[in-house]
Length: 112
Image (cartoon, rainbow, N blue to C red):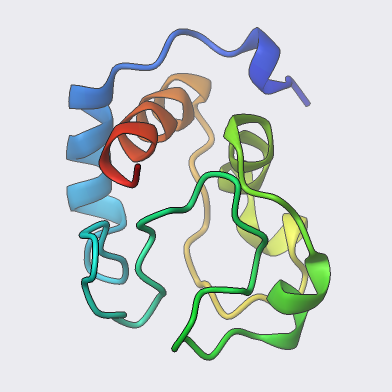
């Protein structure tokens, strides 16, 4: 599996389109925004999995204890259920390295 260090440069504009079509039905990125089916992703980078206040995470997500950053998100977004077995997230993942890099670039801007 290729690491984030080998990923192509991300394009935040392309990543925003990916977010809107594949993520926004379950997640928001707005500061102070509420949770949807999935947690609000504002402040994602540097946060430990399963720790967003007010969201009911799976035990698997809480127990994984991963710190979200480019490299961990790059691996997670390839196949979330393989990365965190037992997660509630039904998203199958993004197989294309460019799509993952673009989404991460967008999340880096939009969740800060």
